Image (cartoon, rainbow, N blue to C red; front, side, top):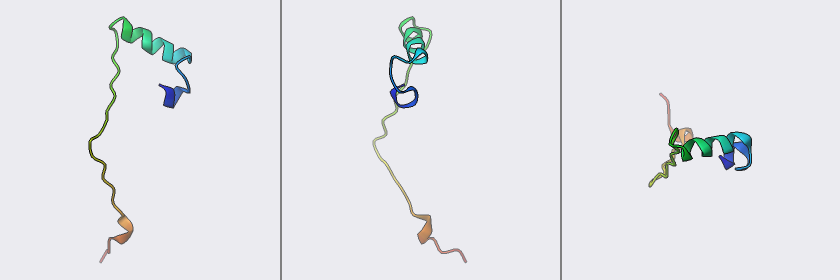
Length: 46
């Protein structure tokens, strides 16, 4: 919520927290164990 709304004091953030406290909503944080990248610039197209 901080990333997208700027702070936990934002009205939308407060409402989402209240929904979670009442059991009407959940929040999920995904933390990957592994990151991978690739460089398409090195691919040769024939």
